[in-house]
Amino acid sequence: MKDGKKSEAALLKFLVPSVIGVLLFLIPFQINGEPTLIINLVIDKTKELLGPVLIPMVIVILFITAICSMAGHFELIRFKGFWADFFNVKLSTCIVRILSAMVSVLIYFKTGPEFIWSANTGGMMMSDVVANLVPFFFWCGIAMPLLTEFGLMEFIGNLMRPIMRPLYKVPGRSAVNAAVAWVGSGTMGIMFTDQEYRAGYYTKKESVIISTGFAIPSIAIVSLLCSFLDLSSLFPQIYLTTIVVGLVAQFILVRIPPISLKPNEYCPTAEKRDISERPPEGYSTFSYAVKCATERAAQPHGNLLINGLKVALDVWFTLLPIVLGLGTVATIICEYTPVVEYLAMPLAWLMQTFGIAEAAAAAQSILLGFIDVFLPFIAGGAIASASTKFIVAVVCILQIIFISETGPLLLKVDFDLGFLDIVLLFLMRTVVALLLVMPVAFLLF
Image (cartoon, rainbow, N blue to C red):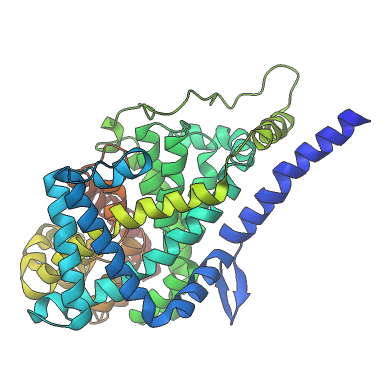
């Protein structure tokens, strides 16, 4: 009787937090006529609540980061423990943080050179991107353990291993990461994967595959992006094509450089984990999945609120300066120089070779996806050919990596990715997706 009660309690400890996590991160509800995740609703309501205080909060965070980084670098203060990783930094990082703090003031007060704070450069980065990341990472940091700490990953991992390992060379548990990234956002998926990597469940190579392979904007955002191209009537075809092309593209990309060359090394500071995901004798796949899940749920989890706040502070102090700095520079280059036009020439030639109409304009629109997910759709609105706009839409939805958000986060995490890796991954995803979607466009149009 006691054993039955214990097993029942263990099962509930697995099920209740996991179901809450799934409802928060994976199940969209119809709210105001649009499919919306509860976690995104909470984030949006927090932004509304903070209102005009949000951007000053960002500026305060940036200045705290800059001042403490100077103090840490020049050893005016000896930061220890939790704070050491944030503020005991090299000179180049210190300079980036100082410059980002200074730029934030120029943007807020709209003073200094207009090309820095205009609505298409620094102004957009501050109001549309950086300010949104503060509540985003706060709530994700607090709520993400519901998916990671109570057995859901172990349960799904054991069930999905026969699919994920042979197709994409990743553990079965990565199916949850993929779902979070696909249904939620690329940023959410990267953050989730980083937590699993630090806990010892994924190698660097597996983390790169998961973080760069399974995310697209939410259904609502994709619908909005299609409206920019005047393709709302083709939304079902675009979304279905995006799913199929995305899965096929990732199957190809995990088998070629640069992903295939990444080291299969676990986080050096993580404890060794049993990641075999194979049921021992006497267990079915399902029963072993339940056993692993309940055992994980029964383990001590520490103070989840404190741990979540630590994750949020980590991102605020280390990521926000990079996003604002890199994003502002990238948008200035895009807005005030012909660099994108020149860089797009090889892609335009490839599209012309396959007979794509308005190839030059399409190529430039596609490359703008490296800056921000919205820019290709805004620029592509001037394209007349519906077939070409269809290609632009699918390719840019699948690019995943952009400087205004996911790019800096990929540089921050310890997946052995440098800036050139980020650029190469973006280009490889773009070219492979382009080659796969062009035949579909020929069939549809």
